Length: 132
Image (cartoon, rainbow, N blue to C red; front, side, top):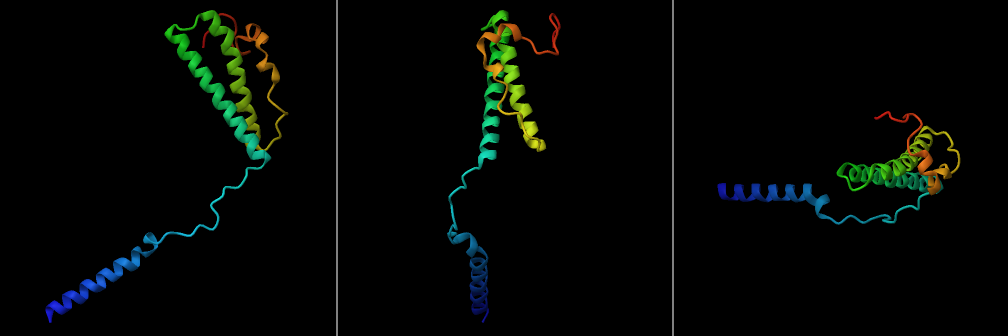
């Protein structure tokens, strides 16, 4: 009788394990596995985030090149202002969007003017001769 009880207990245990594991063993049937197309606001937010990431990565690379001596102080000063303005403009636009306020059109196009590099090599809040 004890062998029969052990077999019956083992069968009940296996049945319970299979019943509990059933949702994990079955392949789910997807209702719809297509992603929704982002709307215009979401596309704009993604574009601003990508622009921010590109500007910050370029700034990080420029800082690294300057610290390792790959780029001269003069070239560094000529490029750092533009990259800082690009990053700040993208961050500002993302902050305005997150706060729910409308942004003022596209980012300031003057940050993309290459002739403007030499005249705007430092942000407004850093005076000549002052270091961070």
